[in-house]
Image (cartoon, rainbow, N blue to C red; front, top):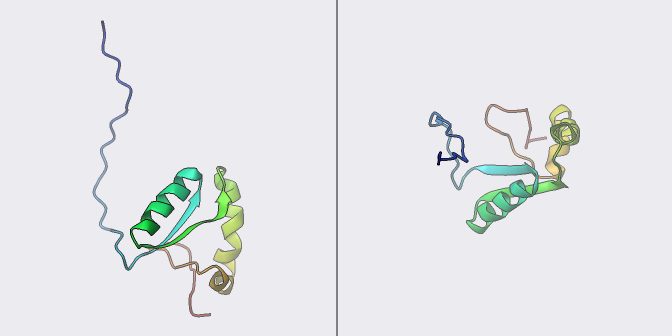
Length: 93
């Protein structure tokens, strides 16, 4: 009988960017994002965990975070942090 392979192997390069306890982390999306954010919070990471609730559609996530990207001062209300090489969030408005 032929062996069935139920997984896909993916070769990934090791990233230069690492998360540590000084990192500010924002989780967005599905219940996976919420569980991951909760676990990071349990390990005392600074996490803003899925503040928009469970959202599966990437366009809906974009529509919800776009105002914070366009108007950085709004981000102070949700404690949104600057993401590495990401959108221009600001904490000094």
